[in-house]
Length: 382
Image 1 (cartoon, one colour):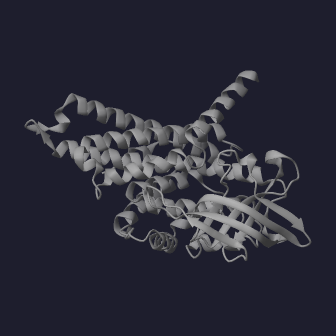
Image 2: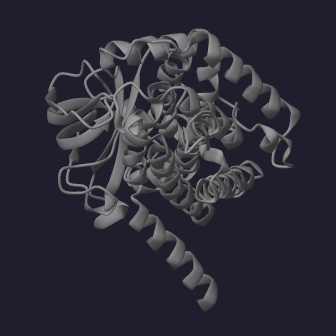
């Protein structure tokens, strides 16, 4: 049983504790989805999460505000139970993040559907030649009478191939670099949208390489203002980056639980593994890493919820520490399982594959170090 004492920390209100406990109970009863067909599993998970009301937390309607602590608690809980369920929830939030923060009433019609689990969303930022370097985006949206012509490519797009709507970032040319980007809402049935390739990765998730073949978009497809694409993308990541750390925390908690179960039941030399001081050292390191990650994650989430305009530094610290630490915790759990740790069908083997991508997407670990260092240096200069 995962440690729940952290819910008593002062970061949380009673509603957060109720949310976490309610979702944990729901997960135990409902997360038994067959992952054999990844696309079908994701569609079912989105539908189930929507019907149960959990996806209402993935976005913010008119006059509402995203609650980052709720987002983190949901991702942590789902990840502890089922990595694909966490993915399904997270992409509904990230995919519609720009609409939650900057969308028009017309665009929010899509948000209403994604929050009910009736439509699947995707966030199309990464390109073949630019991942963390968003300012190097090459896709273009050329202004024409009544709208835009969208051209270019995106890759490693989560939900690519199954999404009903994409938020796409493209260069509109108001200025060079980051200042010349804009965000657009693109339905999956838009003429000229091509799924070039479905991408298979070590932990099966729906991913795709997309191509935009001169797609005609109306003026109403523009999210926010022209030239604000970089600001919109960073605002979305500022909210959701902490939640990546929360998902990693969920994986780490599950790995620690699995390790505790293993070492208390498995015997070596006539005594439980847990009696060995070296094993106790591993368990201590794992427990310490889990709690330290949780403190960083919920500090960042609380700070954002309290009204901080930006939490880039706090979110970067949370994501960096939680994802890197989760990798170590899961690796230690696998080691304590011996041969069973690398055997298909064992939870720690699945966790080992699930965690690796989190150290890359939404800003790789090395990029988070740059964000943190620049923030520290700017404080020194000021």
